Length: 218
Image (cartoon, rainbow, N blue to C red; front, side):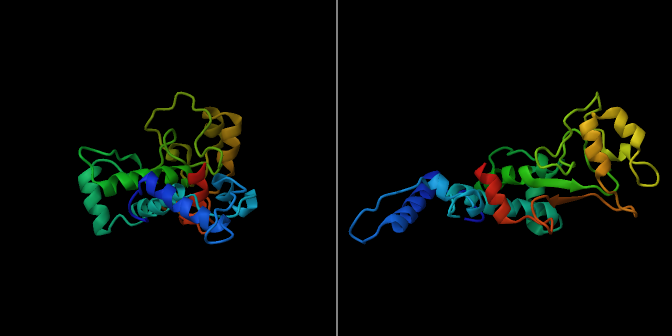
């Protein structure tokens, strides 16, 4: 379940078995389902009972495999998949390719969850594409709301000066006020370091199935 995408029919069968067990008062009698499974599968903080909607839970588990590809590029499995499916790109922009394996198709399915919650932590800004990457710590959208004729390959580093601080004038010139204010609030490191991908919805900035599941439900 944490490696492959399960057939939707199997997920539904598992949910039906769980619902029957929960609502049935006696073994030989069929119980009354007092609430829809979609409601019960919401987090308790949202009025649900915390049950798992199996397809979304499966997707959140599979997403962890994609997170490992991002965080551990030197693993053998990462090198094999990169050589086969994205030799000239990176995992976040990789395509299914010709005749992909079921494992790879499952990982790409899980990637949808990652794309909702990962963003870049800015170091020198050289790896972060302004128009295409998630980098502004704003959950509604991690990307700028407006971009004024910036080249598609423009990077965040172009708005950082030699002291590794934001070039305020340039930021305010190229971005709308709402975006500019959010960008200038981002604290840049005092010492130069590489950009890194983090999970926005966890205090440790590491992918967690719990928060990934909530995103998969949406």
